[in-house]
Image 1 (spheres, rainbow, N blue to C red):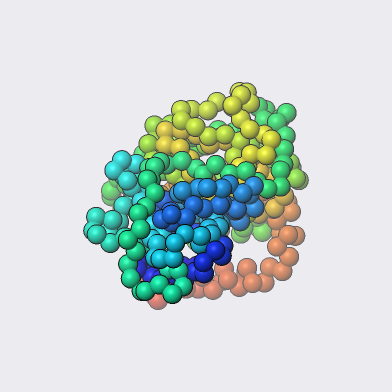
Image 2: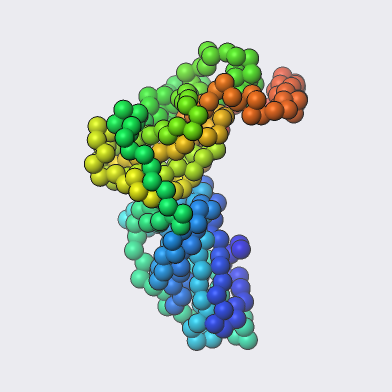
Length: 347
């Protein structure tokens, strides 16, 4: 259900409603609340959860989704559904703050009980706690992540910020595991796979992972970077074994959760911190993992997992559409109709 400023959404007394909140922003982290109506969180990134009740606010990083339920059990009236900037002091300092928040406009929507006038609410909001934290969630269907091979298998992916030269200028660039990511629009990773060519450019920032249905473990360290990046993995959900401030060294499993940890496909990595994730190699393909902040990914904050390479072609099946799409793109790219060039990571 899309919400916008001063938009009315009618509810019936004592009925419960489920909303799916989606953060589609470029860089804003949001805090969502409904005056006088606490939430029950029932799903995150489409993962069903053990219901978490009496929640006064929910935090959404860029790209995250949250399913919440509220009950219209208050006095009949109009109530603000508030969407506030999150993360940092002042609010939004680390995650974007639109100019509208410095006006007298309440950003969000209006929940109107049936029979009430079309008027702005006079309701009072809950006290909001500003934070950059990932929501605490527990998957409804429990799963224990194997830990015996963690120390041997876990790999560090340090994230740093530097500069690279382009068009005679030095530009800010993100590096993951020592490499920024710049793709080749005319020859994507899957084309290398189809050609059985293993000479991937270093700028593809590729991590090859093999082993059918095996677990893989990754530690993303952002020490020295105060921003909390919302990071998204294509092709998989992942389990969050741990996160925190400082640098995590995967020489032991101390402090990690392997018994039914949080499961998401987008997670907010703490600033000056780390996240430890695990996922199962059950989906052959070339899968991107990247920061969901628009200009961070354009500045190279990405890597890709090349998963079970020998099975990718057979898993795709019919290749005609892939080949036709690539041929059409190359025809356009090399034609006079193209008046622009790739000027960032290409993602």
